[in-house]
Image (cartoon, rainbow, N blue to C red; front, side, top):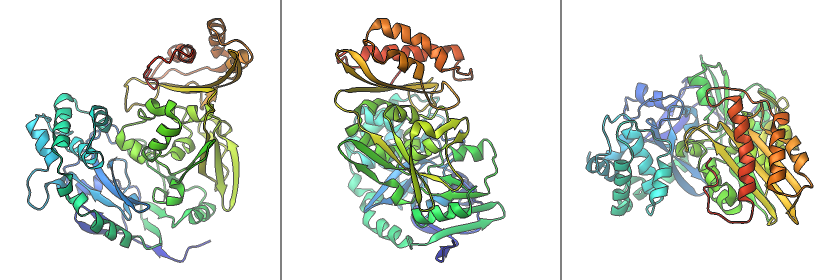
Length: 489
């Protein structure tokens, strides 16, 4: 069950130099490494949970033949995940000449900073946008800044700075673009086909060579914690101080990042990030466009994965309700054996999923709605963007002569697990799709759910909101084609 080719170090590029590390704490995050060990203090710790964006850095990684740079939260990103990557910090923007980068200069000229604490993270987010999308418009800028909180400047001058630097262009002179080929070759050279294992007095981390290797490791170490994007596990370490003696990092496994399409369904590897799935979601499931853009901020979407959101089993995870409503199945793997189950059957109780010892989520199979099916998903949260759900509701119906011949509803935040409103569905099935029947059906939510009260909302509020989402879905499915912001509630 062992693996012969094992490397005992991680290797990555930090700005303009190669770093090779061994014998470091397996839960060491990138922000602490930069500030405490490298004396690169431009990145700041504001929240330690990936919420404020003050710690934003860029991570360049090879995806197929492309070198992609993405903004990430360094406070919840583990150093062990950087193997074979290019880590770029705010210090690197000044270049060898030491002059301000165009993005930094625009922030100064448009007075985009006051106290300055959040400014390095904002600059890095705008830098990522400036490189990736030179033609970015207002909405693109706002979306790129979703994960950056500023409590004193306000966003008008920051957006003005973004528009100014985008209009000026000049990306071809930027080192990360100008030297892209050279950096890419260096990263290719770091990928030697070995498993990585690093052990310290704090614990152990493993980077499997491939998915088969991952499956074998889990048979040997079934209690290991799998880390894909770390958007949850990073909080377990920073906030809950949980003891996680063995971490399996899987974010580098390309086999888990495949997206396959057919006429009737989509297949996502469990390691596909929200950002990587975006174009496919927008094209094949346009009903989720607004909803998808409200999952975390840009940094979280770049790190978080669909499979991780499912495997974590949170009752307020964003993706399970719409995926359940669509009839999604997941493929679970243990060793060489695979089994496929409905996603709704995966969630058994709070903190308990249908996951056998040594088993992991390998892929997610999502049916694409037919032309005669109506589908929508809504998220309610205190902030419109980058906020945890108070509740989510998703609905899919098929009507024939205005009678309900098929209906699926699913909610998050209403029970200990993501759950369907089966009494509501049973009542509506076979009945006319009209206001009278909707009015009667919403009363049955009390039979399906007994939500809890917490800081995000009371049980009474959640129940009323769920009822109103069904009413909203009814109104928006009436064929009037009203232009609405479908993902915002």
